[in-house]
Amino acid sequence: MALKKITVKASRGYDILIGGGLLDNAAEHMKRAVKAKNFAVITDDHVAPLYGDKLADSLKSAGFSVCQKVFPHGEASKSSYTLNAIYDFLSENSVTRSDCVLALGGGVVGDIAGFAAATYQRGIDYIQIPTSLLAQVDSSVGGKTAIDLPSGKNLVGAFWQPRLVLIDTNTLDTLPEEFFIDGLGEVIKYGMIKSKSLFELLERHDSLGIRGVLEDVIYECVSIKAAVVEADEFDSGERMLLNFGHTLGHAIEKMTNYTGISHGRAISVGMRMITKAAENSALTAKGLTNRLTACLERYGLNAEVAFTPYELAKAALNDKKRMGEMIHIIVCKDAGKSEVIKMSTNEFILLLS
Ligand code: GLY
Image 1 (cartoon, helix red, strand yellow):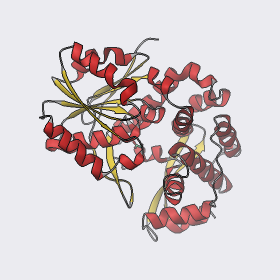
Image 2: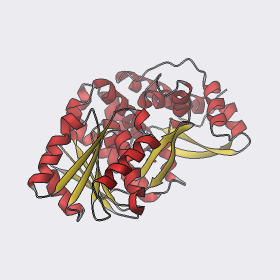
Image 3: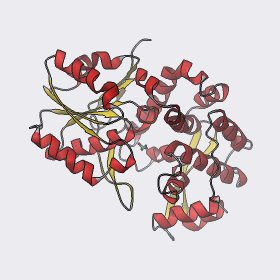
Image 4: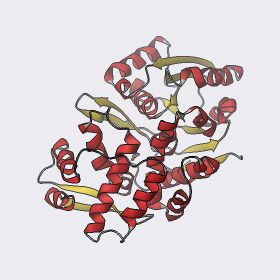
């Protein structure tokens, strides 16, 4: 299929390229995006054996020099410990401001490599090469970079836009099914918040059938994300829509110590709960909860959790130490139509009770 391109007009503009097999000609695309002659690949031990050599070969045969840092896969690596190891690696390999970091992997790799690039020598170029569905449709676009602290996820980070996002959809062929399903949680989110046609397409397919139209689905999600980031790069308005289902979803992840349930499944529960509560309060069109629930079920995203919406709302507020303050809640009025509603924490608790 033909290469698709989306240009993000943020504080630093960049292209997002989408297509099967892009990694084979990675160097060609990078040449157009950055001036670097040396590339530092940051990746994990799942992705390195699959795509590390392919990427390095493409770069070396184009005359570039390449070094590679591999760390253990998983959220536990998104830490200051790994970050320091990346800084040491960049320094030991004499990486300078005229070089470029390549974040090859899923969301953890993209977030930590992006943060290392944002801060090493006060900021160097980086390119996102996402290999999971979740990273392709969400975390690789928009310049949010971060590491976790023991007290919570993404608590230290920076907005630092990449120079290019290279989405090789063939990398999804090696993505284990459970991670593919997980990414579909974010895909359904995009349909709910911004695209009725995407949501209706998702309603007509399932996790097998959707693979036949995956490039179009990824293109639609990334187009939405790019437009939202252009409208509100620093997350003070429109970008909050991307958090639909995330307030309760994050509470579930936290209450299960980030091991009980995956992110996509947790936000799926969050989307369902907030939509049900909003429908009960006439903030949402009648029947949307049933449609959303049925759609999530088609993709195996119908996990049940041991917590009530009320318990999760309380936990979300305690976590953010926000009792007595105003908070922003994302509600879908209908499929493809979302809004940010500012309410007091008491109103939020009442909504979920
Ligand atoms: N993943 C949410 C955002 O980029 O704002």
